[in-house]
Length: 231
Image (tube, rainbow, N blue to C red):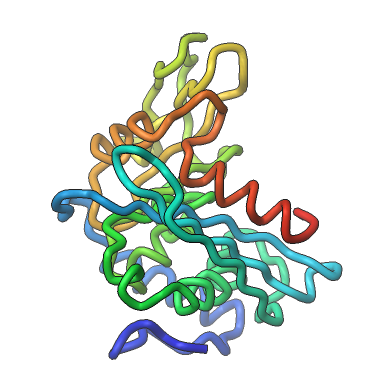
């Protein structure tokens, strides 16, 4: 599998204990301040499983910004490398996402400015959700958009499009809980790498369309569902 980096972060053949220790180490390398320039290309990423979890499937779509029109799309399938273990999903999911990125045309891959991943960023018990892990590996600004809470607490969110409440763990703000569409359950937005909470929130809002999910992850989810059964 291509690493997409001259210096890969780590090997994937790890025990759960080794993976937990590595998450703590990698979390210290996550940049929580903005390091993002002009955004012209956004990649949406969705990861699922087939054949009873034996195959990991990653869908990547690349969108133009601000039109949010799709430029290209890829679905990659690889053998699943780790069983389902709560808190270690990035070790199960990221390898397929890297394979999908490797299958994009090289010139387009180099134009991606922002990753929007169906999953959590730093809103993770060890601050290393799939969006943080993938952003760190690719050295790209990234954010996670998840449908369910993994960690943290929040107050009520007003039932109006664009309303949000902070997602916190003690004194630490991990992201926001956002009402992306009136009358539907909120989504959980958190920065992954090279983004602040405020900027991650702004990008999630900027990419909202008529649906619950922001367009990059919605289109990746739709592509993955069309190419195989979601799980």
